[in-house]
Structures are given as structure tokens and as C-alpha cells.
Amino acid sequence: MKVALVTSAGLAHPDIDLPPLVHELSNLDVEAEIVSWDADVDWSMYEAAIIRSTWDYHRRLDEFDHWLTEVATHTQLWNPAEVIRWNLDKRYLVDLAANGLPIVPSEFVDSRQPNWQQRVMSFGSDIVVKPAVGAGSHGVRRFTDDHDQAINYAHELIEHRQTPLIQSYLHDIDTYGEVGLVTAGGVLSHAFHKAAILDGEPEWSGDDHVVEVITAHLPSDQELALCERVLAVLPPTAYARIDLLPTNDGPVISEVELIEPSLFLEVDPGAAQRIASAFASLLRR
Image (cartoon, rainbow, N blue to C red; front, top):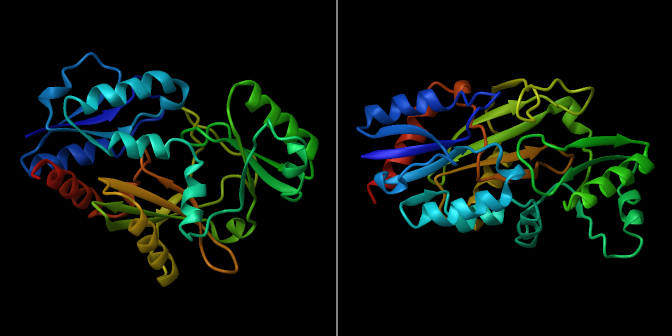
């Protein structure tokens, strides 16, 4: 069996998850090839194409959307195209909230609404502004006691035909950091802890990625319970990464990443094998 692990060409920030996945898949008699999503290849020669690090998709949305349709006609695409289209715009958070899941307080700016600037100011004196469509930390900015600059940045996004997402900055992250729960085939594989990246001037690596401090994490009962609630509302997925932020009332969802999240396999010695086994099971359906 042959599978494509789909990435982007010319990444400055390498996808370190790929080599261990290729190795573990080979142990399961699956030949894995690392292929750029925009490469000129015959996708029908693969039993499945599994998106892993298409980190430039947000700059080439129309091309990427066309590619989703094209690939899905020739092979299995994971995660499925309809799931990816739903997930690439962070307005999916509204859907999660409608299902009763706790999310970071969020507001999507509609520039057609009068006085939308007042909605930005109502989020308090410490806010994060980001584009609703973006990979990694692309376009994420924090504004403290500076509504004018926050509104100007939102204007800038709107002028570039992007929808601004306004979120409250949750200060507990400065102390406790962020937690990521990685699932494979609808089952928790491993978890990691990420130190806060917006509590000072971030250090940037290539491809709009912030240099992050990642360590292994043992999930709490609350985090595990929230993970199960998220999985219960998702369709079948090859993988998911559920990012949680701490609050006094328990964890809340920052993002549910179903397109191209780093899985941080290095934090758990068994993670690559578990993810590879989940991928292999997709091919044998």
C-alpha cells in the first residue's frame, strides 16, 4: 500500500513529524511518500493522501480549494475535503460554541455592521486580533491598552479581504501555558504543553511560525473530558489537535486543528507509532 503525506514545497520551517511517520508506516507495510500538495503527480496511485504540513494554503486559498476537489476525485483525502473547508475558517468556533463547547471569548468582525469598532473596544484592554483564515501564527497580534492600533489592524485585514477575529487575551496562559491534545482516529494519542508566545516579543522561525517551547503533558480530568466532548461533535478524522487555554472555570478551546497541525511527535516516544497505526487503518477500510 502507498500513501502520500502531503506537505508544502520549500518550507523554511521543516516538518519534523514526517520522518518518524514514514518510518513507522514502513513498519506497517505502508509505503509513505512525502509529496507537496501542488506537485504534478498522479494522486490515483496512492490509496490515500493525508494532509500534514500544507503551511502555505492560507496564501493560496483558491488554488488549495481547487486541489481539495481534484485530489478527492482520485483517492481518499484525509481529513476529508468538507471537514477541511469547514476548519480552515476559524468561524468554526461559532459552531463549536453552538454545540455547548467552551471557547475563548471571540468576535468575528463584520465590516458591514455599523460601529463594529465599538465591538472591538468592548473586548477589554488586552485583546488578540488575527485573520479568521491563517496557518501557524500568521497574522496574530496582541494589543494591550491600544484600541486605536487594534482597530487599525482590523481595518488592514478587512482591506486585504480577510475577516478579523477578536479574542480576549486570557492571562492565565502566562502562568500555565497552553495544552494541546492530539488524537488519531478519534482516540487520544498524546498531549503537550506549550509556553505562552504572546507574553512578550515572540521569536519567529520561517513560514510565519513562532519559535515555541513544547514539552510533554499529562492531561487533567477536565482536559480529557473536554477532549471527549469535542470528538463527539466532529465527523470521523484521521487526526485532530485540540488546543486548550486555562481559565478559573476550567479549560476552554482555543482551536481545533484538522488541516495541518504540528503533532509534536517528539514529546512522546510512542506517538509516531500510534499515529501511523491510525493512518494505516484508514487504508484498510
